[in-house]
Length: 244
Image (cartoon, rainbow, N blue to C red; front, side, top):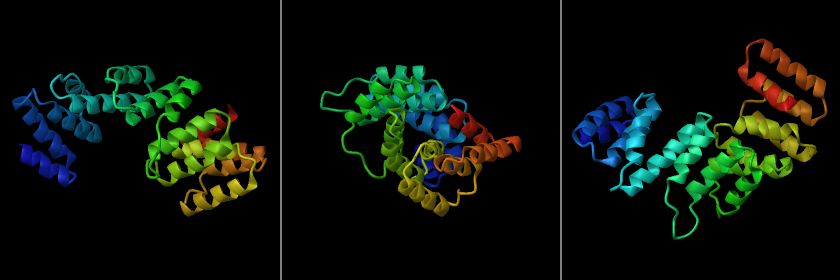
């Protein structure tokens, strides 16, 4: 069963991974690493027992590394599901590192704080992250969100662009909001070139963002209203966000 799970995982056959790990978990219920793998594969496939598997891994007392990873995954799951209070609960169960900063926990703590509009706490957590990899799109998105929430769209721009180019979930929505608030012609032109290269320039949310940046509020509103009338949920969300 373990070899089957390994082979299926290497072949990206997540449904087979789940099947193998479910049977393996029945035989070795004390192995937190198996429940962690099952929870992660199950989350990718929509397996209904994914959360339960992660919670079993998180409760392990004899495999702290697997329990820690499961707690981080549960936090991510609840953040994605719009429940930051529960997400923060999982973080509070992770023991504090005695060897220095804990970037994975700090990043999620800042995301939870932003969900509660607690910008000061998010800013403090970000300040402790240390050096961030240029390929860490999630951290780039977080830095952009903190800067934007601090009423600094120009400061958010570079990180928002980086997150957008790395195709991080939520980066398009943030970058359109950032661009709509820019008044720097150079930055707006740079954003336009990148969005055109990505093939997204004709989307209503982008048309509206650039119209807002150029002071054409009526054009922006009309573009979003037309798309919303056609059933574009993204345009409706952009219209609401930009209106606010």
